[in-house]
Image 1 (cartoon, rainbow over the protein chains, first blue to last red):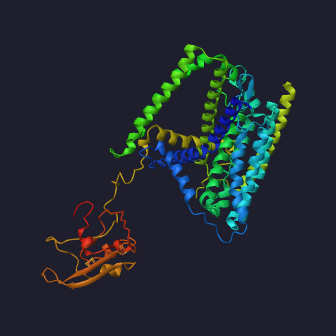
Image 2 (image 1 turned 45 degrees about the horizontal axis):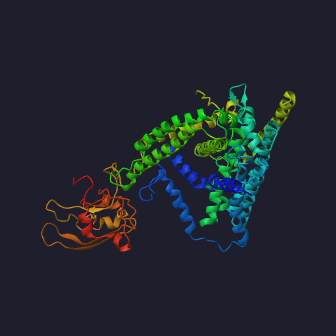
Image 3 (image 1 turned 180 degrees about the vertical axis):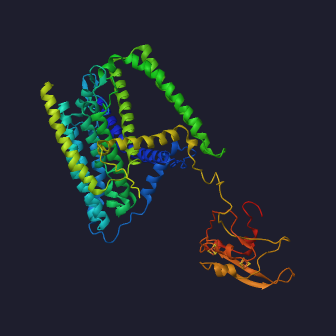
Length: 427
Length: 166
Ligand code: SF4
Ligand code: SF4
């Protein structure tokens, strides 16, 4: 045990917490605002702390606060009190734990030590994710059953049947990936994707394994109980589905758990198919070798992006009545933007002038990769939200047909195909 | 009689693949999202308490008012037509003799309970004297007590027409 080890591990855990738990309010916000914009509405935009709205993000925190302070009502018909309470915890914890193996950056080398940049330093990779993603269904089934309510039970049975039929194809799609990448370790997979195909296409999973990508993304939607596969809580048919009887923070845990699970699915999709923490065409080694160029590029690009963003803020972050304190926000946001620019450019400028040591390069590369991962994760989450507000819900039989008659045979065929190619090419 | 052949969709490979349709749907939603994100003023949502609606039509049934005669006195003759027409029985009238020689009767008490009113407009329709109207344009009425939702004669007389007196 030395200090660096402890610091890195603590930072990793904080990052994992940020990406999973911290993502929940942000995702709720993204969901509501994106839904609004897609439907030509505004979405939540009023809630503010002393004029600061952050585009409506404050609303998520207010909602969470509300859930915490609401009455935790429990119907008398609920006999299995312990299971009833346990269910949301299972959903939440398993969603949260499935996040722990996502690598945010390549293995970090400081001095003679190497650190795995993920929440928990374990090498189980994709298997860990599958295990916990599968476990979360227990929470839904138990919650639905112990609610002693026919709607809840129907919802949880639907969810159970759905997860069984989609988990099979998901795992099989993953098998073909394992054959391609030759490892279950997610870091290895990402590093595999940093290579180039034919010298110019990034060898991302979606390019090498398009079929597996489609199958996996579709099943990930089902796994995360998101539209078009959210029949478990099809409110038009079965009220709220498995969480009909839940209130206050118990419901909140289901709710947050759903978003954490969605974020975890996105993280895995990004890691498996979209090059994980790698920038396209810039693998870890390339990044390290050309770090001066990268720094220069950041120094040029960051102010340009900030300028665009600042102009967007000035144009769009206005409140109708002139003397409202919400109108002061833009001024402060722009100040913060300028401050960030000055700090980043200052630090990078120092590095450029004074030269940069090996360890600092490694850390800086890790930071860039974490940022890349965060951006990709956000984009993937956006796709989840985007799909939700585009597609209607599947009918139940269509859903089962799709799962068993189309996705499963396709994924098995894909394994054979992959195996043939891998054996044939001898890679 | 001609036969109209209705084209059946869903059998071609493109339809059965399902994904092209999904992508075109996503393109549509994305175009809305991008348009609104680029310039939020494209969105027609009004930030309500700050921006009051400007599109209330003259036929909008708002809170009632009692109209005046040319000399400013009350127009209502306490004929009880409105109270009879009212489906929710929420108009309470007590008649009294009118001493000023303009007419014979007028209400001494004219209460409308807005909590019971369903804003059907039946009262305004029934009135033979055009004495009650719902053209105030008042769509939002809030109070902290039940009693405050009962509008009395004076309040009804004080309500103004939304677009000015005809
Ligand atoms: S609007 Fe309809 S319900 Fe309301 S007072 Fe008039 S007649 Fe009665
Ligand atoms: S408001 Fe009209 S209908 Fe009602 S009592 Fe007066 S005159 Fe009669």
